[in-house]
Image 1 (cartoon, helix red, strand yellow):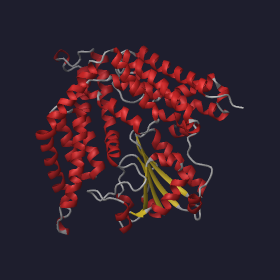
Image 2: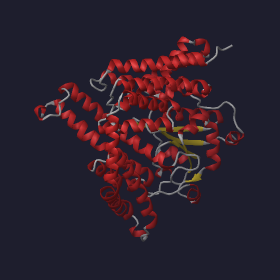
Image 3: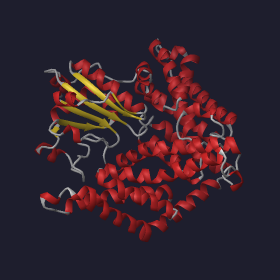
Image 4: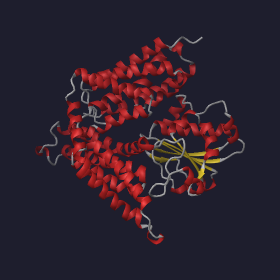
Length: 492
């Protein structure tokens, strides 16, 4: 259903004009297999898949796309499909397991390259793809600890991609933990965790959410940051470092640091340690995890743990003590960031900052971020209704799908409109999102779940002020709609 809605929203899946490079790619039909993945596993994952399918069709190629989204892998590539493929294309903003593509020509990119110009990406993949596992791959990619290459030219690389991989694996723990705590409060009241309630269902749910889901949040973040850098040997050192970060009070900042320390140290150890061929199998299961855990653990316990814990404590106290003016300023900043690039790096930076604070007991930034993220597609949908003369018939029809995506906190529903008229649509969306974020922070609204849109409002205590939260979202939506009415001109 989501893929159909994104298609209805008019995502710029394929560019009608075929470039010279695309013409070369179309010179002979190819069998292509592809994988798409994004940090939240919702919008960009399926928009990139839709774009690749349409782009391949326009060029006369056959393609099968596996989506690694929030519900797991869908349309999974079979061994036969991979064997028959002429080209493997990975459009992902997170780390993707590539061992099954050994011996195949492989090219990597981020999801945005697929969404914005799928035909050009396919043409580029045909000319630049290197054999994974062969000599070409050695020149085009950097081999990680388990032998999986990092993203090739044109992909989302470096610390940002590693952080987003960690976030994508962390989100389910935050969602489950936050909603379980909210349900516990609904059943047993705000003091359900007291010994007086011990043994009740509310008390049990609180233990599962707080001491299960939230306790694993930072280790998962750190472990999969390390996984993105060093593949499987990095998971254990990263998770151990993340757990120690929680022990010393370093919170998510310590978890992020532990993940990068574990990942880069394991990667370095893999390059430096040379063993006879018969003993090389010990590296990924024994030597690298052991030494990586020692390095990461010592660093967290004896070097950076306490300083980072002090920074985290100061940040938490500052956020909790924000007065009205400062709170509004933070809300404006988070809101503007959420709408600035519709799911890009700026949006994700605000989202990660807000999400990771939930486990520290600061849930107001999360409410502001989600309200702001819902506003752009909702505001555009309302503008299409109020100012229909400023939009084409196709845009007005697609606004229905955009509204649904907005209600589900999928900011990317606004992308088709931004692509057509960025100079007017982006400022209007930023104004509305900043308004929603400011009102949410000013009213002290706290949100325990980092995703779900309006659908989490039905869960008791997931939001502390449901009516005010709805008003903040509505106010931002109206501001964006009115701004679009003022900025955009009537169509001839």
